[in-house]
Image (cartoon, rainbow, N blue to C red; front, side, top):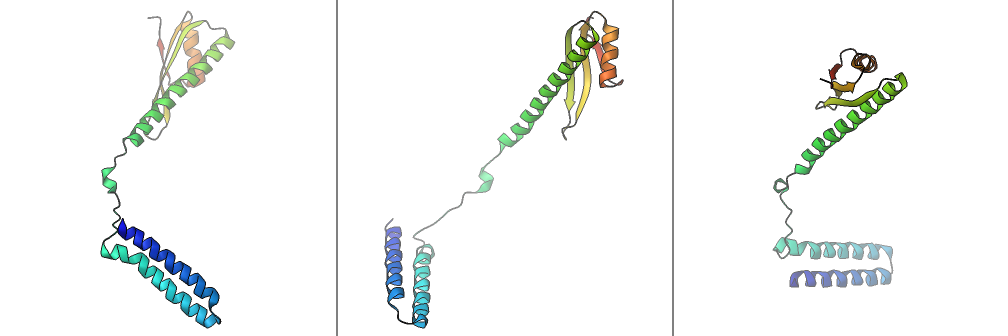
Length: 153
């Protein structure tokens, strides 16, 4: 602490002297020469505590830190994307069933999210009185390859 205090006092004194001499110098050649000398003296005063070991700055080792939150973020994002996608597909199917007049009790959509965040619809479970019409509506909306599961059985 004493080393830092004396360094700060020396920096202030040299800076004040530099200002006074810079304003009092008559010629620009003398002024530039004195400014250079004071700049070198100032740099020497600032470097000396580090060279002597009075002040030691240690940077933390980056390998001490781990980033489990980043891994959790990807998983949380994938789960949220899956839940939102399932809810949106279910809402669209409900609108389609309502507009077609198909009575249903339950529509449950299952999707898979791959590592590159591409979405594939794995299955749709339907509980409805007219399962065949509901299944046909799902296949027409989502594609004929969509697996439709009867929730009645």
